[in-house]
Image (tube, rainbow, N blue to C red):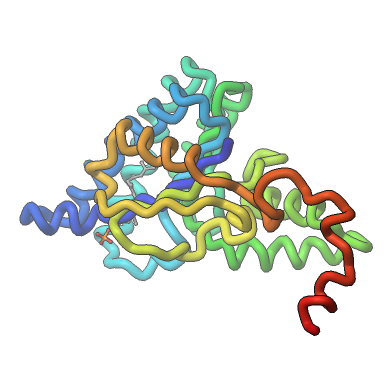
Length: 245
Ligand code: FPP
């Protein structure tokens, strides 16, 4: 099972308390730790967290620097724990605009956790689904008769993701907005969407459990009819013509 989360509402969480937005991101980083632990305990195989979109570079310099600092601190603090818990950590997104120190921290964490089997944790930094799809499309020109499966692999390559990441089963967005914000657009083709008003710093293990419980109640059809496929006799091609008369 692949769960992806758009962690929204850090700024509002802080503003409501009369705090600077960066304080919301600091609390948000704590919620990341709690959620990663809860997801591993729940048996989720892949967890992708949207930490910084390509569009987030447009935010004030102080906020961007604060976020980059938090990512690096998270990698330093959590790599050991990921190794202990057999969690493979991977940062997806563009790397060419990241600071040298953050890049080194990412590579270090990825190397040290590469053998993790229990859960694949992907943190999206400088990520844009449209850019990834464009990059995969450019790479696909070298493959004649490219298939959806080939394309999916090219997408993972473009994102610096480990190979063969499954498509998203459940997409959670906190903070009350109901949009995808350029996150995993290809991978979410058949994802179930779950929106909650809860701001990200307030997101707890119980909120993840509630989202998973709701997911289990959903009927996933992938474009098919509910229940068993109708017998050929009931599905005669002329029935449409009969209806038209
Ligand atoms: C969106 O909330 C959140 C972000 C742009 C940053 C997400 C970062 C974290 C959760 C903390 C650090 C992450 C890691 C992986 C250590 P917003 O600021 O847009 O909130 P708003 O909509 O209320 O303004």
